Length: 105
Image (cartoon, rainbow, N blue to C red; front, side, top):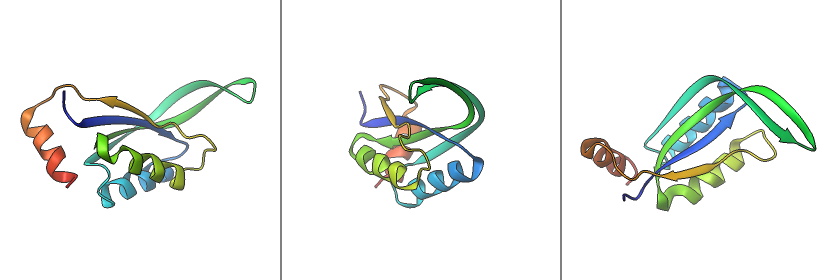
């Protein structure tokens, strides 16, 4: 097991996704953020089933940076309850994992 984490979040627009991604990398909270466009989301909000188009953010970070990532997403996001889910990265390319660690120092 590594200290590395993959955090998922979504954004309502390309501008919002880019703003969050740049802030996370610039603040040293993420080594990399991939922005995947045109994700169809079906979810329950305020008692109703909703459907919308979003962008998915794949945020590469570490366990000790997660609280900062979560706080930044809450600060920068337009949603009342933005998605921020963390998964452990159990294994990966040694060179990539090394680069991640160096990028987060």
